[in-house]
Amino acid sequence: MVNRGFRGVGPEVALSRPVGALPVLRHPTTVCIVPLLRIMIPPDVTGQVVAMVSAEPSCTTVVVSPGVAVHPASGDLVECEVGRDAVDELVDAIAGVPGALVSLGDTTTLLGGSGTQVRRGDAVVWTQVADMLDRSSRLTYLYVAVISIAGAIAAVGILEDLFLLIIAAMALSPDYFPLIAGSLALVRRDRAALVRSLWVLTAGFAAAAVAGWLLTEALLRTGVVQYPGLDPDRAVALFVASPNWVSVVVACLAGVAGALSVTILDNRALVGVFVSITTIPAAAGIGVALALRAWGDLAGSAGQLGINVACLYVTGAITLWVQRVYWSRRAPGVAHPLDRHVPSSDSRPSL
Image 1 (cartoon, one colour):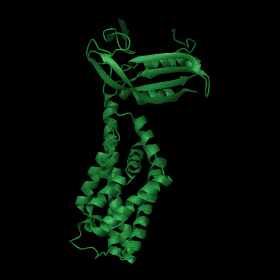
Image 2 (cartoon, helix red, strand yellow; image 1 turned 180 degrees about the vertical axis):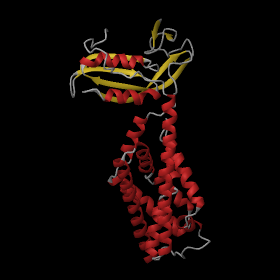
Image 3 (cartoon, helix red, strand yellow; image 1 turned 90 degrees about the horizontal axis):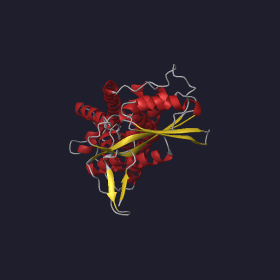
Image 4 (tube, one colour; image 1 turned 60 degrees about the vertical axis):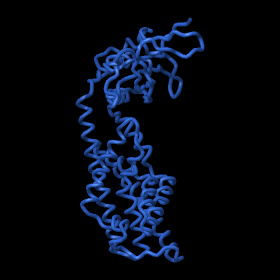
């Protein structure tokens, strides 16, 4: 019989099994997904960083590996598991240390008993949110290609009065992340990020409109479809080109849902469909109206798109701001480190 404990688990949670057998936990455990910080630092500040992360109440594990870092510079590696609501302050503090490099990941921690050390597992890690939005909201050829295809599909949906095709276009459209990135930029007062968001959206919606225009021209000139114009019997066309208070309400709700979805652990992609219901059909409607020379419909679609994007930006920003205020007030009070009075001579912890 071999008695082995899990890494990070106290002696009350152990394995009692023959070698090669499945583990049996003696006591109930709490399984938590905990942020893992990997910090590469110069040896002369290792003691200060370790003291700081160890003082954080939600910290469950600190591991120091002296001298293991070799690139881009030699140094020590510190790994620590902390609560989600402490990550942002720790990252900001450590990032100010000359030569420090911080990476963020997730690890599964098993804790005996109630697992009270890991608190607020639903807290927002703004560092992760900002990084995810930045990576997902860039203007690339793939983004332009996908949103163009979505615009073409939505154009067919408008011509054929088929909501099913509109839904397919919404599911395909990648405009969700650039929109929420703009909302976050408003909260952070990041002018460069806001301009980038507007540029990505403008280019994307222009590509969708052009794709809808070209496909509509081709379908009409070849006689594949016949479009009678905007009339009360064509619900899709009315939905796209007739902005009203209902569309404003839907756009506001979509902005709230989109902002909430990027801050939850299991990001729900279907929320992107809800956000796109207010954007990609209107962008495609501009292209369809241009092909038909229906200038009233074009103005209506453009107005619908502009109003909805503004509502998405504003309500998304308000939602993110409320969350930021909420979690900042519930933060555990991270030990603000690298206190300038801490002597640096005691650089390494005793191992």
